[in-house]
Length: 193
Image: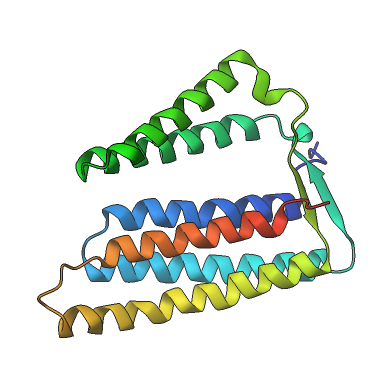
């Protein structure tokens, strides 16, 4: 029997949040331009398709999904938050930034304390809401944002060729772009009222 809480819309929301994160992780380790091009193009195709699918299926229906119906979401969010904190700690140590290190350690400590003590779970719930405005935002982010990433492949390749004296930071650039896309999707789905 099919679980009614895992609707195509919910799975598409999950896809739109996870694909840019997965692309960012892959882009962080993909150095050759051809691999970077494949990852960016594949992620863009998936994001564009998922955005259009979500807009077509959910337009005018007003979908709202509470995380209470998705118990594993808190574990996933906690792991993602810890990974982000670990990355910040690593970068702060690497670039010798004591203030960033202190703030990242405080963040990680609070995350762990709130999760272990159970305080984080009391009274807090995330609701993903889809109305026509959020669907328009999903289309803009999914289509325009993805096309910007694809266009940036050629632009950044030319930029690196014309500025050979500057360190090649294309991997970092695309990681930031895809993290931004994931964050923007999350903001579009988040209940604001």
